[in-house]
Length: 90
Image (cartoon, rainbow, N blue to C red; front, side):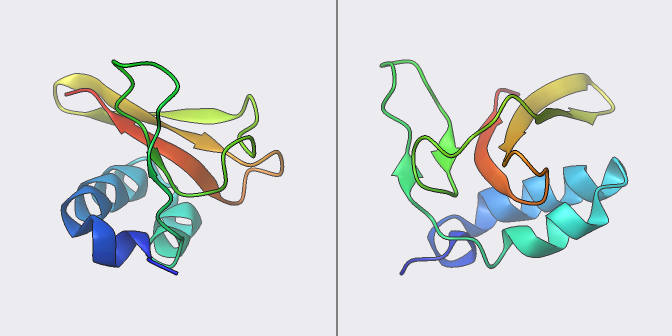
């Protein structure tokens, strides 16, 4: 199975940094070992990267912010312990 750290190290580094900055150290630590399921295909404009099987996301999410403001989001599993999708917009 392809892991996020192998498929998208650039994305992993940026999202890990943003999650740590928001105090989400446990989520950031788990992200490197999560699988890479590819790009979301829900719409032609969707830029999300799947780190869990499609359909496993819940309504839980975290806005990713840096000094410029919101630059993306991560969706989480229902228990909030794993990232299911990552989308960077800025």
